[in-house]
Length: 368
Ligand SMILES: Nc1ncnc2c1ncn2[C@@H]1O[C@H](COP(=O)(O)OP(=O)(O)O)[C@@H](O)[C@H]1O
Ligand SMILES: N[C@@H](CCC(=O)OP(=O)(O)O)C(=O)O
Image (cartoon, rainbow, N blue to C red; front, side, top):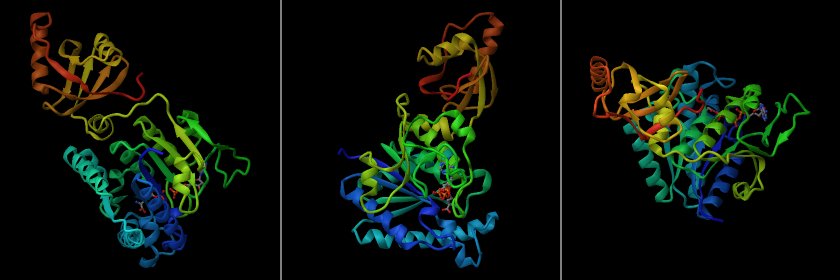
């Protein structure tokens, strides 16, 4: 078996009980399985939920809090308890773990994104298991990853993982919620996530988790688009993760033949960057950049909005709408000057100003 880089995401329901405590047996089982993977020479990054679910009892809440301040207070207590427990259990295997708490803005800021990448890579090179969670105590509703399923898929794309394993309290994806529909049928393999499955998916989860199966399907779709294959399911015992990568897991395997990994820079442009403006292009430019792999040059541009500098990211708009995003090679002022000159002279300038180099361009997932 060749060495793989594997992201393992563990949901709250697989780490805690409904009273607001860490379930020591469940957590130990996961640590045993991760240690087995590390022992087999694989690189493992753990995305662990459970901070809110592990902390709320100590704050005197009878069940998972629903207010933002309640969740944030519970998370600050629960995260410490979780990490303390992980550290103790991993040390029994002589494995060092590292805590990494991320917010959405750590991804949208390019320097912080690069730093996070460098840090995680360094930890992996030194045989350490990074344990990632959202920094719940400072994240606000509008600025979250949504849930840890999405965080785990973004992390797996970002560090070019070979696969993402989402461990949960159910043995895979069904065509309906098996807790409410006993006739629901299980999918053992899926090639991509069909749109109708996403539309029908249920966002009801367990009492301690968030998002239900819908958030897992959305996360799987994102991971696949970044070239990472996905497993969603459960398991028991120290060999459960090895069995999953060996194709014998109790869950659903999801893969995608078509998608290829996007490099880190293109992932940042596509998924995390904020757009500083819009560039409207004609049909010739649409064909050149979408279908012929060319860079975008100024003669294909007919309108520019917003103010941007070289290196900023803009949206590109064709006749039928949004077609992709790219990092510009020139400023909005240069481009607007070019257009003014072109209209004054009634023809294109001799020099072809480059607007977006093809290496800095990412086409929209759905091109209209
Ligand atoms: N189509 C489906 N297939 C499988 N599980 C589903 C489906 N729809 C909803 N669910 C529910 O999703 C739950 C898992 O989601 P969640 O509680 O958020 O997990 P976690 O805490 O592991 O993130 C399952 O226990 C199940 O009740
Ligand atoms: N960051 C939160 C995770 C919330 C979440 O996504 O939970 P889950 O659906 O159980 O993966 C916590 O640690 O409680």
